[in-house]
Image (cartoon, rainbow, N blue to C red; front, top):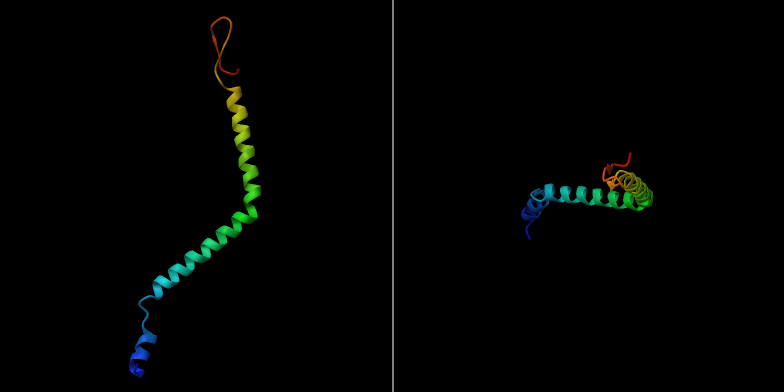
Length: 75
């Protein structure tokens, strides 16, 4: 390989944009994984509590029949 070809190869920036993009995506993925590991249990508990509350409230608001045939809407 000649010296001129080596200098041209070194100065070539064709793939630089894609490399930077891949590095940024990799960094975001690492940060997201770390955040999920750190906050995962806490967020899971919060979501489960919210789901339980919604389930309880939805159970109170269900339509049930009464002896006189009228509908009771949880009131």
